[in-house]
Image (cartoon, rainbow, N blue to C red; front, side, top):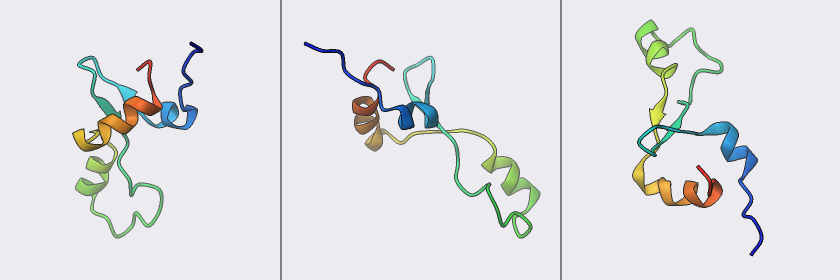
Length: 65
């Protein structure tokens, strides 16, 4: 059976934590930042864990993660 391919777009957007969960970036930090308070911008800069409902799809995109 041939090797399975990793989706390169998914590999660039998500990383795997030590416990096997997927880490993602938050949206909303690209532009229109003047109306967002400093606390909100700080929280948007931190990474988040992908919800478990989307994990099955990510495992299919990144089979070796």
